[in-house]
Image (cartoon, rainbow, N blue to C red; front, side, top):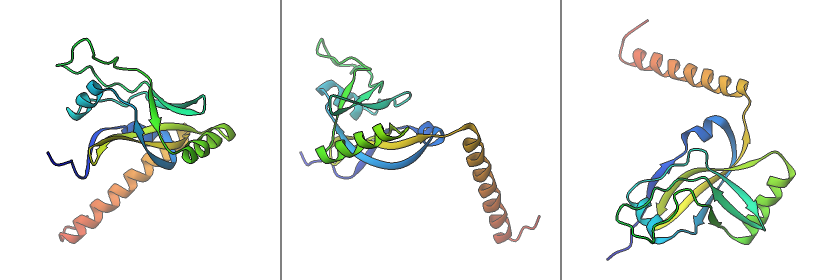
Length: 159
């Protein structure tokens, strides 16, 4: 059977970009069990409340929900178990240094399959204040209004 090509998104964390300013993104593998991979291939996962944290010089993903595989037996996995992130040692050391020096956190942005391998995109993020969120919403609304006006003008409809 030929290997999968391309990128198939399983789950994305839309709220992360609203709550955090993403400074940098990294692609990491995950240490998964067989039933977790089968459940992910069925398109079932949730990144709500998930976060990555350093422990003993390694990075771990906490609170990511992968539901139990329906055809699984006693070998089924625990849905919210802690999963190890697989990155190169240099990247891990760089991320741990950034996490320790300032008020940054690691937030998972997407879970996807890249050429058949389960990956997670994690973002180095800084929490937004309430006024930052309001500014972002106001800017997005203003941009949407501008695009509507341009579209109406292009169609010959004047305000």
